[in-house]
Amino acid sequence: MTALGIAPLLSGCDAVGGAVNTAVTDASGGNVSLGGQLPAGWPSEVPVIDGTVLFGAGTSTSDQQGWVVTIDATSADPLADARTQLEEAGFVADTSASGETSGVVAMTNNTYRVVVVGNKDGILYTVTPL
Image 1 (cartoon, rainbow, N blue to C red):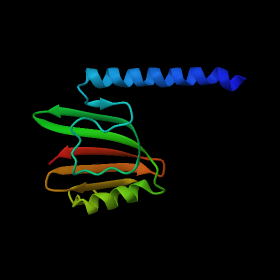
Image 2 (cartoon, one colour):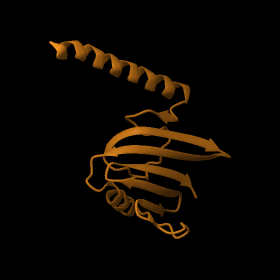
Image 3 (cartoon, helix red, strand yellow):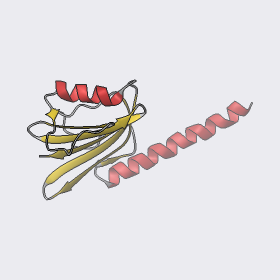
Image 4 (cartoon, helix red, strand yellow):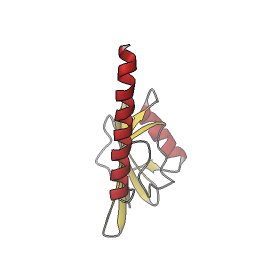
């Protein structure tokens, strides 16, 4: 009986969450996502690991675009998988980074610098043009 009473409440939460996400996306022109999708303009040459997009944002300053995305990863080792995907997409270790530490991967290609921070639970990507 209790489960029947909770189901409408949960579906109401989904509806409210969807409405909030739609309002934020509409207000930001697609530059912010509260879950489920990459932000508008995310570069197709930057792969992301499998999982649920929890948050994504894009911004423009001085005619340059930048993005951040957090992902609740499905991988057992999301940081290693992110590195592998970036390498397969042509990215190389960023030698200008001040030294790679545990939980951080910095890589570049001819167009973008990607810094990935993560642990077994998830990943934060930061993408900026070179």
